[in-house]
Amino acid sequence: MWAFIHKLGSPKWFYGISAKLQPWFWAAAALLLLVGSLWGLVFAPADYQQGNSFRIIYVHVPAAFLAQSIFISMAVSGLVFMVWKIKVADMAAAVMAPLGAAMTIVALFSGAVWGVPTWGTWWMWDARLTSMLILLFLYLGVIALRGAFSSRDSASRAASVLAMVGVINIPIIKYSVDWWYTLHQPASFTLTSRPTMPTEMWLPLVIMVLGFYSFFIALTLMRTRSEILRREASKRWVQDLVNGQTVHVQAEETR
Amino acid sequence: MHSTSHSASDSSSDGAARSASQRSAHGSSPSALESALQEAGAVKEAQAWPLLEHQGGLMLAVKATLVRDLTLLLRRRGEVLNPLVFFALVITLFPIAISPDPELLAVIAPGLLWVAALLAALLSLDSLFRSDYDDGSLEQLLLATQPLAALSLAKVAVHWLLTGLPLALMAPLLGIMLALPAGSYAVLALSLALGTASLSLIGAIGAALTVGLARGGVLLSLLILPLYIPVLIFGAGAVQAAILGDGVAAHLAILGALLAAALMLAPWAIAASLRISING
Image (tube, rainbow over all chains, first blue to last red):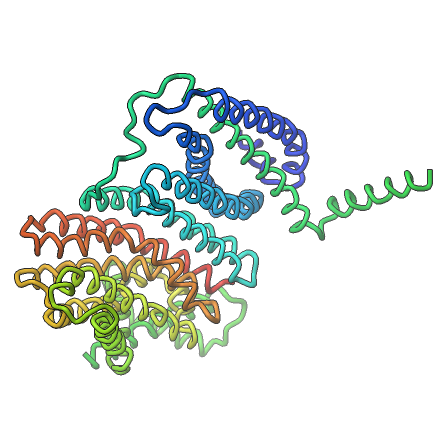
């Protein structure tokens, strides 16, 4: 167990193992997203109340799941980095933040688009939309703080602390916003209190959620690998790797 | 107060002398006279303060930090008054921008007062650690043997005492100007007093993270404002509930719970952030 963690801490080892894992996650993501979107957007039956507009759920819900999960994994990576000083964890946290912010924007935008047919307006101060908007601000704060430091080590540790503070606050923010929303009771029907969804409607949703997660893992692995190359550029193994490749390419050219 | 601060600084310099004597005892070759002098000083000190080293160290350090920060801030009255003036000014802007109609103002007054007080508290946060960072006393605080979390809690307490509490006391006056319905003034002051304590604690994390940055002011508000939302919801909610005649105990209890959680967790985050800012 500890040997595994120590190996995981080595950027070189992570670079190697992620190269093997990456294609599997890309393949899973492509397959799941293709099947899920075809099934959800074409074959699933239309909702009796909302018609075809409910199909936005197949993008909206996975994006919203991912937006929250990425913040949690970013905070966990920050904790791992702060406690065990594992550099790869911080590199992963650094590349996760923009992806999480992008997913939050996707969730907000698809929610706004969904709002037009259901509420008749682009924006409502709905509890879920409001907490999503706050989550976006939290992401932007982490990204901005990381960018503000000139020393990379300080930036990593500051961003880790802020991510951990944020993740403690997310449930508090979520419940207080929910409470605030129920207190003010605007006249609208909620999107979420639908009766039990038929299987042919929720199964594609599950596939889409799994596809989004596979996509997130694959993209994080890929971007962490390039972050490793960038940060470890002065290390011997990276230079050997790069030089080896260029030698190889030159050999092919001369052949 | 002045004499207390004097004795506190004396004791801290004694502590420095003691640690210096320990260092020289371990060191290779201190001059004989010097070490004899320091030893004598250490013995004398041990006789004068027989128990302090074991029991009073932390309390003494916290008290010294409290007294020092209070003295410093009370000598720079402008810094204490500026957030209050800002609060009054922002409240003045709203009737000008929206409407002087008392009925309309009465509806939005709880939210306006809370948002303006929150911004005023935020404005004063940037200077919480700034001057200590600039003159190097923050580094001395980090080097102290006492836990940094406790010392930073003392600094935050002073910040609340001279920012949050005056804002809470001033809010009812501005409430009159916004035609806030009668019966909610005490709740307004109480909710602000409770809420701004949480705001000071949470905000100090951001202030500690950004103190090493040259232009941390705007970044500080970007980091901290999303975390302020629960306090704002229950603070403004308490005043609304008082106006509507609902029970306010639940709101105030949740504000107190938020404060308890912040008191428990924030000092550690502040201490960790200060270490990051100093080392970086």
